Length: 304
Image (cartoon, rainbow, N blue to C red; front, top):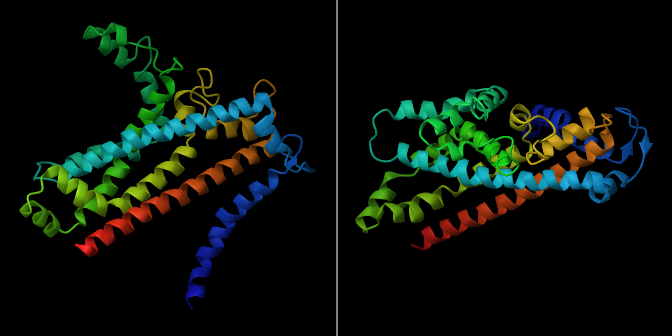
């Protein structure tokens, strides 16, 4: 009976998730002209991806940039999300609902719209940020934020973190509100300060939420495309400093690499397969580490 009720979900998952993934892996072993793949080449696409100097240099650049993108997002977006959640669930604060709404509003906006707005704000000639810096006497800090390879990726990542910080904030708020108040009162009676309550009570009990947030951030970052496309374009300028796996896949399998401009779907499928393997391994590792932390916290609580 339970299998009968699960069949519709299994059918939808198989048709729209499992089959495309398996088919993409199959296509990575073929090559052809444009969107027609009829020539079986085995692992040739993977050899080109990892060994061809022209292709592999762009691939490893995008792969490295994706890890930087993920690291900055984890440090900024999720740290601020946890901070906001602690503030909004702490001592009585007037207008909590208002602040929650303000923090979450950017999540509801289109990534293309927010990316374009920030591109205008960061314009080196007449953007609001550089004009403000000039007005307050900080002209030396008025940089071409999106035109400098040293700052472009960090700026794009911070814009993405600004837009999505509301998501981990709401998830951490939900996790904090589920923690019984008795635990906080007991810790305070034992003389625990704010930091000790957070480190020894709140954070261990938030580890399942931390694991979910980490996985969602990891998956979202390695699938990121629209924010870079909106702010920098599909070629990841300047000098490929903002090129991610998503933009590299788009140029390779859909739009076609410059200057030829002919799509190589077999190579694009190889890029997609490598991305899937990285995501799968990362999710398994995150779940394992988070599970061990949760089990350790539960065991320590049981011994107490």
